[in-house]
Image (cartoon, rainbow, N blue to C red; front, side):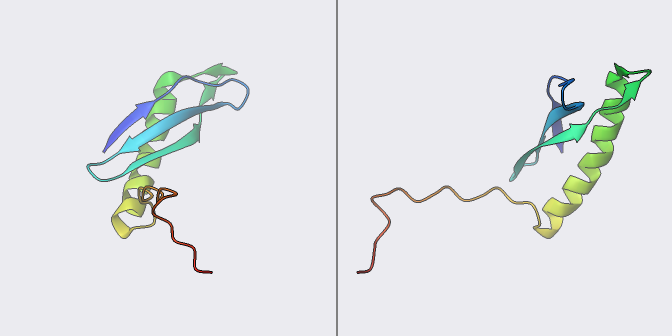
Length: 80
């Protein structure tokens, strides 16, 4: 699984993370680690790696999937 960690947000004390496999792309925020009130990049990366294990397990059982593309308005039929 590939993980991409975005920029630390001090207001929410979190980082946006993208988790990607061949079939699924999942984005969420992960709580950042702080050391003496300062963002700890290394510890946060370790936390993200732990979260990735859970995300991978959820993808494996189908609890996290990439949503299907919405139908276009011309493809939707309304029964009247």
